[in-house]
Amino acid sequence: MNPDHTFFTLLRAGLWGHDFSPAPDTDISAVTKELRAHAIANLAADTLAQADPENRLIYAQSAAKSYRHWYNLMQVQQDCIRALDSAQIPCCVLKGAAAGIYYPQPLNRNMGDIDLLVLPKDIDRAAELLLESGCKLLDDRNPRHTILTKNKIHIEVHRQFATRNRLDRAEMLDDLLFSALAQTSRQQIEGFEFTMLPPAENGFVLMEHINSHMASGLGLRQIIDWMYYVHQELDDNSWQNVLCPVLSAAGLKKLAVTVTRMCQIYLGLREDITWCQEADDALCHKLMAHTLSQGNFGRKQEHTIHRTVQVLNVLDSNLTFFQLLHRHGCYNWKAVGKHPWLKPFAWIYQLCRYIRKAFRNG
Image (cartoon, rainbow, N blue to C red; front, top):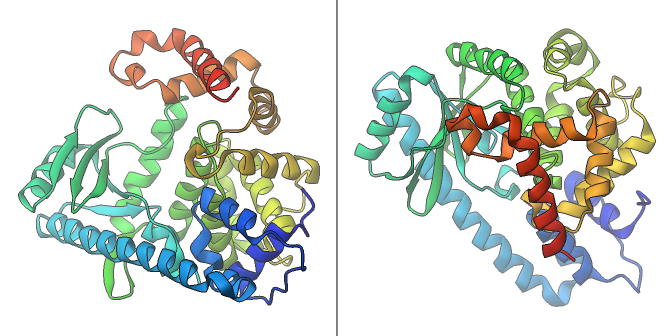
C-alpha cells in the first residue's frame, strides 16, 4: 500500500495533471484493469495514452463510449428536471452531476444512474409527470425511491436518501435535505442545466454515499467525488463552521476526517487542508486497502469478512460485531422497509449474506 506505487502515481498524475514517466517494467495493463474496476479509467485516459502509446486508440475508444453515455444521461436528466419544474415540484440532483461539477473535466467522471430528490408528498405526482414525459416505470415498491428508465438510463426518484439502519438519524438527515430543497441552485455543465443542493448539504450527501457503501461496495469513484468537493469547498474555515457540526450529528465526522486524510496520503489532495490531520494514518491505510479490495459498488469483491468488519468497527468503535451485522442487514434487506417486524432478524440476513459471498469468492 505504498503511496508511491505505480497505480497511485499514475492516478495522481491523471487527477491533477502531473507528468508521469513509467518505469521500463511497468505493467500498464494491470494498472488499467484496476482503474476500470473502480470506474475511473477516464480520469487517467490521457496519462495512460502517453505512458502506453501503442494502445492509445483503445483508450480513446473507451473514453468515447463513456462520453456518449454521459451526454445521453445529461439530456435525460435535463428533460426530467424540466418536467418537474413545469409542475413547480422542487427537486435536485444527488451525486452524479452534482459531484461531477467539482471535477476539472466533468466529462471524465463516469456516470451511472440519475438520482433525484423530491419531497415525500410529491413522489407520486413526480413519477406521474416523468411517465407522461416518456419515462417507463421499473419499480415502485422500494421504500426509498421509485425507479424509472428512459433511453436505457435508470432514474431513481428519492423520497428518502439517508441510510436507514438508524431510523432517528436517517429522519433527521433527510429532513435536512428536504429543507435545503428550497435553497437549490441552478448549475450548468457542457450546456446541460440541473439543480443541486447548497454546498454543505451536497457535501453531506457525498459523505453519506461513502458511508452507505462501506459494507456493500465502496470504490475509488466515491472517494474521488469527495476529494474534489473538499478541494473546492471545504477549507479549514468551511469545515469548522459549516459541515463539521452536521457530520458530527450524523456520526460521520470520523469517517470524513479519515477519508480526507487518506486522499492526501494516496491521491494528492493538497496539504494546506489541515482539519483532517487528526486522522489515524494507520486507519487511512486500512481504509484504502478495504476500498481497493472492493472496486466500484463491490465490482471486485475480493475482500475478506475479517477486513470489512475490522475497518467498519474501527470507524464506529461503539458497535459490536453483531450490532454491525444488524446495522448493515437493515440497510441491505429490502424487506425490512416493507415489514418493520423483520428488523430484529436483520443481523441473521446480513450474516447469511457474508457467508454466501465467502463461498462465492472461495
